[in-house]
Amino acid sequence: MILVLTHADHEQGTEPVLDWLLAYGASFLKISSRDLVEPPRNWVIDVNRGDILIDGLSLREHVHVVWYRRFFDAFDARALGRLGAHAAQVAGDIRNETNHLGQFLFEVLQDKVWLPDYPALQRTKNKLSVLQLAQRCGLPTPRSLVLTTKAQLRAFWAECGGRLITKPVDFCGYYLEGADAYTAFTTRVTEAMLDELPDTFFPTLYQQQVAAEYELRVFYLDGTCYATAILNTRPAAPDQPYADVKLVYSSPQTHVVPYQLPPAVALRVAHFMRTARLRTGSLDLMRTAEGEYVFIEVNPVGQYLSPSQRCHHHLEQHLARWLVEQDHEEAVLPPAPALGGPGYLD
Image 1 (spheres, rainbow, N blue to C red):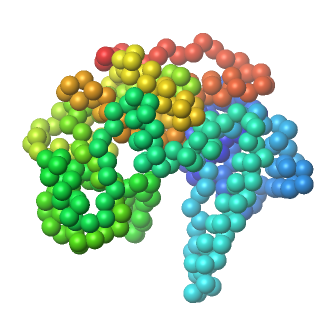
Image 2 (cartoon, helix red, strand yellow):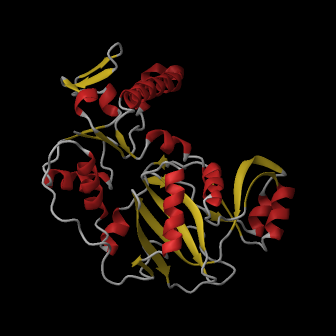
């Protein structure tokens, strides 16, 4: 059986893979952290036997493969409003209890085949450690500093010719206000921003902005790279390029096309992913005018559906096939889809 760990509500990358699992006749179970604490699922955690039963089904006995697509849902604390001043503390305690229950689930299933490997996923959440690892594996990385003073930042800004960006060290969530949602994108550091900063501030990651011809999104699955080039044709001043491709991804001047990585780069990517013990992940690379491929970051549970659909990569089908092949139960598998689609760049 395949166990799918994902959010309770719609997660765009998960459902298309589940459709393929259904088409293949695979045996799978989808659960979220919300299932741990809310009905109608009937859970029993047998601590002494080291097992978890869902509606009488033993996960330890029946699960062979675990696909982790995110698991911990945000806890809705609105129902705790009647507790007044204690609501925030109670919400925090409930989150902690849920996290510990989830961690025990991971421990019970630690000898199963995971996609991605859960301990590796936790280690690669730190962008600073990942940048170091990529560099050791032969992938160029941007010059990066974590700074705390305006004087340090001004010196780095001058050293990089005014081409600096800043972004969170960890994933930044969304701040909801009415119908609006706010988050922190990768942002270019301007002189006006420098002037407004206090003399000291919270430790913040700054990187030299890569002078890229285009950005690449590479989906990696167990030794194979599926690459996508994101080309933006909007005219822009050379000294004011956009800092985050997500801000222009939906623009009609942005074109998403299949891309073939040079073999040497694909080998370095595979070496990096094996060293990180990641069977899968979405990597961001930038190609410079000099032909250098600069590593930016990797997200082990990154999104892949849009590049898959726009470039005919069929990633959801490849993922489903991989999960079924790792499972010990029989399923009918047609021939694998061809790699990529028309219009390959190399």
